[in-house]
Length: 253
Image (cartoon, rainbow, N blue to C red; front, side, top):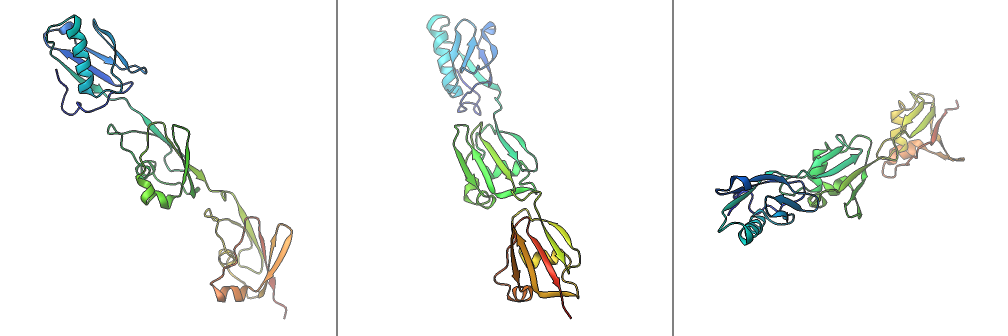
């Protein structure tokens, strides 16, 4: 009785294909696939529960069944011909979404799964990554945490890693008045845009601009700020929101 050394400790699971070879009993040698129930069918002894057993333990169980009623001191070998493929899924805003096969070792962590999926797509929310376990529980992660200690969290077959799209996809704000390129601006996907950067993106102030009178229209309210003071201060940026309309007034001579 035996198993190939590399197979002996492997725990059998549904959809594995195993091969039984019985010494001097060619008609009992067979290749079978383990059913979802964990059972596999063998000549004479019928269905045997082998799922969840190591290869060496399954071989011992099969040998005992043959020895009980059919063979005297049977000598047999059980090996794995084909390992069942199990998957985790990485979906959403990643570069290569889809299913990732679990290694035969069963070891696959968060960081490896994200790397296999190509990392986050440009429209991803780096703070909005969810792990939905096959058991139904959900955990939330950031990309920075996955790049750190959380990246070593082990995954199991059926788990889903979901990278959510940034809430700022398709959002914009507008800069009007005395700037080089007035008009709408796409809002950054990280959700952070301040007044100084917005005006820079709009081509900067023109020679006719009044840097002390810049208005921000937001959901019906209007705020007037001194852009010159804000840009010189630098430590307290004026943060903008999607749909804001910034207007740079013209200087009065």
